[in-house]
Length: 377
Ligand SMILES: *Cc1c(COP(=O)(O)O)cnc(C)c1O
Image 1: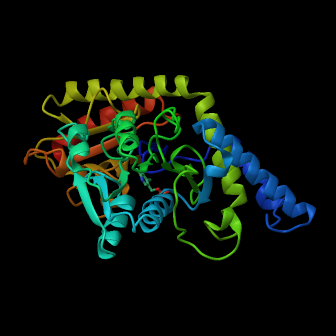
Image 2: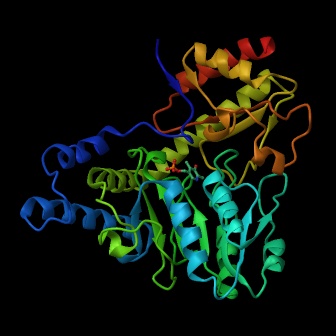
Image 3: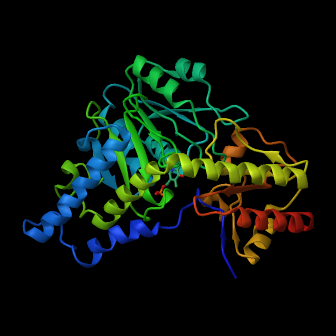
Protein backbone atom coordinates (compact mmCIF):
# COMPACT_ATOMS: atom_id res chain seq x y z
CA UNK A 1 0.00 0.00 0.00
CA UNK A 2 1.47 3.40 -0.87
CA UNK A 3 2.00 6.05 1.74
CA UNK A 4 0.30 9.46 1.55
CA UNK A 5 2.32 11.85 3.67
CA UNK A 6 0.53 15.11 4.47
CA UNK A 7 2.23 16.03 7.73
CA UNK A 8 5.20 18.08 6.53
CA UNK A 9 4.84 20.55 9.39
CA UNK A 10 5.57 17.73 11.87
CA UNK A 11 8.64 16.57 9.99
CA UNK A 12 9.83 16.00 6.43
CA UNK A 13 11.47 13.04 4.72
CA UNK A 14 15.23 13.38 4.30
CA UNK A 15 16.13 14.60 0.80
CA UNK A 16 18.30 11.98 -0.89
CA UNK A 17 20.88 14.57 -2.01
CA UNK A 18 21.17 15.64 1.62
CA UNK A 19 21.74 12.07 2.75
CA UNK A 20 24.46 11.62 0.12
CA UNK A 21 26.30 14.67 1.48
CA UNK A 22 25.94 13.42 5.07
CA UNK A 23 27.00 9.81 4.58
CA UNK A 24 30.77 10.36 4.24
CA UNK A 25 30.78 12.26 7.55
CA UNK A 26 29.43 9.17 9.31
CA UNK A 27 31.33 6.43 7.49
CA UNK A 28 34.66 7.90 6.31
CA UNK A 29 35.36 11.36 7.72
CA UNK A 30 34.16 10.53 11.21
CA UNK A 31 36.88 12.40 13.09
CA UNK A 32 36.10 14.47 16.15
CA UNK A 33 36.20 18.12 15.01
CA UNK A 34 38.21 18.99 18.13
CA UNK A 35 41.00 16.54 17.21
CA UNK A 36 44.15 18.07 15.83
CA UNK A 37 45.02 15.46 13.16
CA UNK A 38 43.79 15.64 9.57
CA UNK A 39 40.70 13.46 10.09
CA UNK A 40 39.52 15.87 12.78
CA UNK A 41 40.32 18.93 10.69
CA UNK A 42 38.18 17.60 7.83
CA UNK A 43 35.20 17.52 10.21
CA UNK A 44 36.01 20.96 11.57
CA UNK A 45 36.26 22.41 8.05
CA UNK A 46 32.93 20.86 7.09
CA UNK A 47 31.28 22.47 10.11
CA UNK A 48 32.75 25.89 9.34
CA UNK A 49 31.72 25.65 5.68
CA UNK A 50 28.17 24.82 6.80
CA UNK A 51 28.23 27.71 9.24
CA UNK A 52 29.22 30.23 6.59
CA UNK A 53 26.74 28.81 4.05
CA UNK A 54 23.91 29.20 6.57
CA UNK A 55 25.09 32.68 7.60
CA UNK A 56 25.03 33.79 3.96
CA UNK A 57 21.43 32.60 3.57
CA UNK A 58 20.14 34.66 6.52
CA UNK A 59 22.62 37.56 6.04
CA UNK A 60 24.43 37.11 9.37
CA UNK A 61 28.08 36.59 10.24
CA UNK A 62 29.21 32.96 10.52
CA UNK A 63 30.28 33.71 14.11
CA UNK A 64 26.64 34.45 14.96
CA UNK A 65 25.48 30.88 14.19
CA UNK A 66 25.42 28.25 16.99
CA UNK A 67 24.62 24.61 16.21
CA UNK A 68 22.15 22.84 18.49
CA UNK A 69 20.12 19.64 18.65
CA UNK A 70 17.06 21.23 17.03
CA UNK A 71 14.31 23.78 17.32
CA UNK A 72 13.43 23.09 20.95
CA UNK A 73 17.00 23.52 22.14
CA UNK A 74 17.45 26.69 20.06
CA UNK A 75 14.29 28.20 21.57
CA UNK A 76 15.41 27.31 25.11
CA UNK A 77 18.93 28.60 24.48
CA UNK A 78 17.72 31.92 23.09
CA UNK A 79 15.00 32.67 25.61
CA UNK A 80 16.64 31.35 28.79
CA UNK A 81 20.05 32.51 27.63
CA UNK A 82 19.00 36.09 26.92
CA UNK A 83 16.67 36.36 29.94
CA UNK A 84 19.37 35.23 32.38
CA UNK A 85 21.99 37.49 30.82
CA UNK A 86 19.78 40.59 31.10
CA UNK A 87 18.12 39.93 34.46
CA UNK A 88 19.91 42.85 36.09
CA UNK A 89 18.26 45.10 33.55
CA UNK A 90 14.72 43.75 33.93
CA UNK A 91 12.52 40.70 34.28
CA UNK A 92 9.79 41.17 31.69
CA UNK A 93 9.37 39.08 28.52
CA UNK A 94 6.72 39.46 25.82
CA UNK A 95 5.61 36.45 23.77
CA UNK A 96 2.37 35.30 22.13
CA UNK A 97 -0.29 32.86 23.24
CA UNK A 98 0.13 30.71 20.11
CA UNK A 99 3.81 29.84 20.38
CA UNK A 100 5.12 26.30 20.09
CA UNK A 101 5.47 24.52 23.47
CA UNK A 102 9.25 24.90 23.11
CA UNK A 103 8.69 28.62 23.71
CA UNK A 104 5.64 28.51 26.02
CA UNK A 105 7.10 25.93 28.40
CA UNK A 106 10.43 27.74 28.41
CA UNK A 107 8.61 30.91 29.47
CA UNK A 108 6.82 28.93 32.21
CA UNK A 109 10.22 27.75 33.47
CA UNK A 110 11.36 31.36 33.60
CA UNK A 111 8.25 32.41 35.54
CA UNK A 112 9.51 30.10 38.31
CA UNK A 113 12.79 32.06 38.27
CA UNK A 114 10.92 35.31 38.84
CA UNK A 115 10.48 36.52 35.27
CA UNK A 116 7.14 38.08 34.31
CA UNK A 117 5.71 36.99 30.97
CA UNK A 118 3.11 38.76 28.83
CA UNK A 119 1.32 36.31 26.51
CA UNK A 120 -0.13 38.49 23.76
CA UNK A 121 -3.52 37.37 22.43
CA UNK A 122 -4.07 36.97 18.68
CA UNK A 123 -6.97 37.91 16.39
CA UNK A 124 -9.26 35.40 14.62
CA UNK A 125 -6.56 34.85 11.97
CA UNK A 126 -3.80 34.19 14.49
CA UNK A 127 -1.95 37.52 14.16
CA UNK A 128 -0.70 39.50 17.12
CA UNK A 129 -1.71 43.14 17.43
CA UNK A 130 1.22 45.54 16.99
CA UNK A 131 -0.32 48.32 19.10
CA UNK A 132 -0.85 45.84 21.91
CA UNK A 133 2.77 44.70 21.57
CA UNK A 134 4.00 48.27 21.85
CA UNK A 135 1.82 49.15 24.84
CA UNK A 136 2.96 45.97 26.63
CA UNK A 137 6.56 47.16 26.62
CA UNK A 138 7.77 48.43 30.01
CA UNK A 139 11.18 49.73 31.14
CA UNK A 140 11.91 46.22 32.44
CA UNK A 141 11.16 44.42 29.14
CA UNK A 142 14.29 42.53 28.16
CA UNK A 143 13.04 40.22 25.40
CA UNK A 144 10.34 39.90 22.75
CA UNK A 145 9.85 36.37 21.39
CA UNK A 146 7.24 35.99 18.65
CA UNK A 147 7.17 33.09 16.21
CA UNK A 148 7.78 33.72 12.50
CA UNK A 149 5.00 31.40 11.36
CA UNK A 150 2.64 29.21 13.34
CA UNK A 151 3.01 25.43 13.12
CA UNK A 152 -0.70 24.63 13.43
CA UNK A 153 -2.52 27.23 11.34
CA UNK A 154 0.37 28.51 9.22
CA UNK A 155 -0.18 32.20 10.03
CA UNK A 156 2.86 34.37 9.31
CA UNK A 157 3.31 37.02 12.00
CA UNK A 158 4.17 40.67 11.12
CA UNK A 159 7.87 40.06 11.74
CA UNK A 160 9.19 43.18 10.01
CA UNK A 161 6.97 45.47 12.11
CA UNK A 162 7.78 43.58 15.31
CA UNK A 163 11.47 44.00 14.51
CA UNK A 164 11.00 47.74 14.05
CA UNK A 165 9.24 48.08 17.40
CA UNK A 166 11.89 45.97 19.17
CA UNK A 167 14.66 48.02 17.66
CA UNK A 168 12.93 51.33 18.50
CA UNK A 169 12.91 50.33 22.20
CA UNK A 170 16.28 48.60 21.96
CA UNK A 171 14.87 45.23 23.10
CA UNK A 172 16.30 41.92 21.81
CA UNK A 173 13.85 40.18 19.41
CA UNK A 174 13.88 36.38 19.17
CA UNK A 175 11.77 34.54 16.62
CA UNK A 176 11.02 30.81 16.42
CA UNK A 177 11.45 30.40 12.65
CA UNK A 178 11.27 26.61 12.64
CA UNK A 179 8.28 26.59 10.26
CA UNK A 180 9.43 29.54 8.17
CA UNK A 181 13.00 28.48 7.46
CA UNK A 182 13.29 26.99 4.00
CA UNK A 183 9.88 28.38 3.03
CA UNK A 184 10.34 32.15 3.38
CA UNK A 185 13.43 34.26 2.64
CA UNK A 186 14.78 35.61 5.92
CA UNK A 187 17.28 38.47 6.23
CA UNK A 188 17.98 38.95 9.93
CA UNK A 189 19.51 42.41 9.45
CA UNK A 190 16.68 43.76 7.33
CA UNK A 191 14.08 42.37 9.76
CA UNK A 192 15.90 43.51 12.94
CA UNK A 193 15.96 39.96 14.29
CA UNK A 194 18.38 39.46 17.19
CA UNK A 195 17.89 35.70 17.55
CA UNK A 196 16.42 33.10 15.18
CA UNK A 197 15.71 29.41 15.88
CA UNK A 198 15.46 26.73 13.19
CA UNK A 199 15.58 22.97 12.80
CA UNK A 200 16.81 20.81 9.90
CA UNK A 201 14.08 18.16 9.90
CA UNK A 202 11.44 20.72 8.93
CA UNK A 203 13.15 21.42 5.57
CA UNK A 204 14.13 17.90 4.36
CA UNK A 205 17.22 17.69 6.55
CA UNK A 206 17.93 15.21 9.35
CA UNK A 207 16.30 15.12 12.79
CA UNK A 208 18.18 16.13 15.91
CA UNK A 209 20.07 19.10 14.50
CA UNK A 210 19.22 22.78 14.40
CA UNK A 211 20.79 26.15 14.90
CA UNK A 212 20.37 29.42 16.69
CA UNK A 213 21.44 32.70 15.16
CA UNK A 214 22.21 35.28 17.85
CA UNK A 215 23.40 38.76 16.90
CA UNK A 216 26.85 39.57 18.25
CA UNK A 217 25.30 42.66 19.88
CA UNK A 218 23.26 40.45 22.22
CA UNK A 219 24.59 38.84 25.36
CA UNK A 220 23.35 35.36 26.39
CA UNK A 221 24.16 32.66 28.90
CA UNK A 222 24.82 29.11 27.78
CA UNK A 223 22.56 26.17 28.64
CA UNK A 224 25.06 23.34 28.18
CA UNK A 225 28.42 23.50 29.91
CA UNK A 226 31.40 21.34 29.08
CA UNK A 227 33.97 21.48 26.29
CA UNK A 228 35.04 24.44 24.23
CA UNK A 229 32.76 23.84 21.24
CA UNK A 230 30.69 26.69 19.74
CA UNK A 231 32.82 29.36 21.44
CA UNK A 232 32.01 27.83 24.84
CA UNK A 233 28.33 28.66 24.35
CA UNK A 234 27.17 25.11 23.59
CA UNK A 235 29.31 22.20 24.70
CA UNK A 236 29.26 18.73 23.16
CA UNK A 237 30.87 16.99 20.21
CA UNK A 238 29.27 18.44 17.11
CA UNK A 239 26.76 16.47 15.04
CA UNK A 240 28.99 16.83 11.97
CA UNK A 241 26.87 14.83 9.52
CA UNK A 242 23.73 16.53 10.80
CA UNK A 243 25.24 19.99 10.44
CA UNK A 244 26.40 19.22 6.88
CA UNK A 245 22.93 17.83 6.15
CA UNK A 246 21.26 20.95 7.52
CA UNK A 247 23.30 23.36 5.42
CA UNK A 248 22.86 21.21 2.30
CA UNK A 249 19.11 21.03 2.87
CA UNK A 250 18.88 24.77 3.46
CA UNK A 251 20.89 25.63 0.36
CA UNK A 252 18.69 23.36 -1.71
CA UNK A 253 15.47 24.79 -0.24
CA UNK A 254 16.43 28.35 -1.09
CA UNK A 255 17.83 27.46 -4.53
CA UNK A 256 14.39 26.10 -5.50
CA UNK A 257 12.23 28.31 -3.32
CA UNK A 258 9.99 29.94 -5.92
CA UNK A 259 9.29 26.72 -7.86
CA UNK A 260 8.57 24.70 -4.73
CA UNK A 261 6.41 27.36 -3.11
CA UNK A 262 4.35 27.80 -6.27
CA UNK A 263 3.61 24.11 -6.69
CA UNK A 264 3.06 23.53 -2.95
CA UNK A 265 0.67 26.49 -2.71
CA UNK A 266 -1.21 25.40 -5.84
CA UNK A 267 -1.77 21.94 -4.35
CA UNK A 268 -2.85 23.44 -1.02
CA UNK A 269 -5.30 25.83 -2.69
CA UNK A 270 -6.63 23.00 -4.86
CA UNK A 271 -7.19 20.89 -1.74
CA UNK A 272 -9.00 23.73 0.05
CA UNK A 273 -11.26 24.55 -2.88
CA UNK A 274 -12.18 20.90 -3.54
CA UNK A 275 -12.79 20.06 0.11
CA UNK A 276 -14.98 23.17 0.47
CA UNK A 277 -17.07 21.93 -2.48
CA UNK A 278 -17.57 18.57 -0.76
CA UNK A 279 -18.17 20.07 2.70
CA UNK A 280 -19.56 23.60 2.36
CA UNK A 281 -19.79 24.05 6.16
CA UNK A 282 -16.08 23.50 6.97
CA UNK A 283 -14.12 26.30 8.57
CA UNK A 284 -10.67 27.21 7.28
CA UNK A 285 -8.56 28.17 10.30
CA UNK A 286 -5.96 30.92 10.19
CA UNK A 287 -5.24 33.63 7.66
CA UNK A 288 -5.70 32.97 3.95
CA UNK A 289 -3.25 35.64 2.80
CA UNK A 290 -0.50 35.66 5.42
CA UNK A 291 0.01 31.93 5.48
CA UNK A 292 2.70 29.34 4.87
CA UNK A 293 2.25 27.90 1.36
CA UNK A 294 1.79 24.26 2.44
CA UNK A 295 -0.53 24.68 5.41
CA UNK A 296 -4.23 23.83 5.37
CA UNK A 297 -6.03 23.70 8.69
CA UNK A 298 -9.74 22.98 8.51
CA UNK A 299 -12.50 22.13 10.97
CA UNK A 300 -15.49 19.94 10.24
CA UNK A 301 -18.72 20.81 11.99
CA UNK A 302 -19.78 18.29 14.66
CA UNK A 303 -17.37 15.54 13.64
CA UNK A 304 -15.02 13.35 15.63
CA UNK A 305 -11.49 14.02 14.45
CA UNK A 306 -10.05 11.01 16.26
CA UNK A 307 -12.26 8.83 14.05
CA UNK A 308 -11.27 10.83 10.97
CA UNK A 309 -7.56 10.42 11.72
CA UNK A 310 -7.93 6.69 12.43
CA UNK A 311 -9.76 6.12 9.16
CA UNK A 312 -7.16 8.15 7.26
CA UNK A 313 -4.41 6.10 8.89
CA UNK A 314 -6.12 2.87 7.87
CA UNK A 315 -5.56 3.82 4.22
CA UNK A 316 -2.03 5.07 4.95
CA UNK A 317 -2.76 8.80 4.91
CA UNK A 318 -0.69 10.72 7.46
CA UNK A 319 -2.39 13.90 8.66
CA UNK A 320 -2.49 15.72 11.95
CA UNK A 321 -5.09 16.89 14.40
CA UNK A 322 -3.31 20.19 14.87
CA UNK A 323 0.22 19.92 16.09
CA UNK A 324 2.19 16.71 16.44
CA UNK A 325 2.75 17.38 20.11
CA UNK A 326 -0.92 17.66 21.02
CA UNK A 327 -2.03 15.02 18.51
CA UNK A 328 -1.09 12.16 20.83
CA UNK A 329 -3.41 13.58 23.46
CA UNK A 330 -6.06 15.08 21.16
CA UNK A 331 -6.80 17.88 23.58
CA UNK A 332 -8.15 21.12 22.21
CA UNK A 333 -5.27 23.06 20.72
CA UNK A 334 -4.15 26.24 22.52
CA UNK A 335 -3.79 27.86 19.09
CA UNK A 336 -7.38 27.16 18.04
CA UNK A 337 -8.56 28.33 21.47
CA UNK A 338 -6.61 31.55 20.97
CA UNK A 339 -8.25 32.31 17.60
CA UNK A 340 -11.67 31.68 19.16
CA UNK A 341 -13.20 28.53 17.66
CA UNK A 342 -16.99 28.19 17.75
CA UNK A 343 -18.08 25.28 19.95
CA UNK A 344 -19.49 22.98 17.28
CA UNK A 345 -16.18 23.20 15.41
CA UNK A 346 -13.77 22.94 18.32
CA UNK A 347 -11.93 19.68 18.64
CA UNK A 348 -12.63 18.79 15.00
CA UNK A 349 -9.66 20.32 13.25
CA UNK A 350 -7.51 18.58 10.69
CA UNK A 351 -4.10 19.85 9.61
CA UNK A 352 -2.89 18.93 6.15
CA UNK A 353 0.61 20.15 5.37
CA UNK A 354 1.83 19.77 1.80
CA UNK A 355 5.51 19.26 0.98
CA UNK A 356 7.67 19.33 -2.10
CA UNK A 357 7.18 15.63 -2.83
CA UNK A 358 3.36 15.61 -2.76
CA UNK A 359 1.54 15.16 -6.08
CA UNK A 360 -1.87 16.10 -7.41
CA UNK A 361 -2.78 12.38 -7.52
CA UNK A 362 -2.07 12.10 -3.81
CA UNK A 363 -4.19 15.16 -3.04
CA UNK A 364 -7.01 13.72 -5.17
CA UNK A 365 -6.85 10.51 -3.14
CA UNK A 366 -6.98 12.52 0.09
CA UNK A 367 -10.05 14.47 -1.07
CA UNK A 368 -11.82 11.33 -2.25
CA UNK A 369 -11.05 9.55 1.03
CA UNK A 370 -12.25 12.46 3.17
CA UNK A 371 -15.45 12.68 1.12
CA UNK A 372 -16.12 9.03 1.94
CA UNK A 373 -15.13 8.88 5.59
CA UNK A 374 -16.08 12.21 7.15
CA UNK A 375 -19.85 11.62 6.91
CA UNK A 376 -19.31 8.39 8.93
CA UNK A 377 -17.32 10.10 11.69
C1 LIG B 1 8.93 21.58 15.16
C2 LIG B 1 8.91 22.89 15.85
C3 LIG B 1 9.72 23.15 16.97
C4 LIG B 1 10.57 22.09 17.60
O1 LIG B 1 11.65 21.71 16.78
P1 LIG B 1 12.42 20.34 17.10
O2 LIG B 1 13.55 20.34 16.14
O3 LIG B 1 11.45 19.25 16.84
O4 LIG B 1 12.86 20.41 18.53
C5 LIG B 1 9.70 24.41 17.52
N1 LIG B 1 8.92 25.38 17.01
C6 LIG B 1 8.12 25.18 15.93
C7 LIG B 1 7.31 26.31 15.40
C8 LIG B 1 8.08 23.93 15.33
O5 LIG B 1 7.29 23.73 14.28
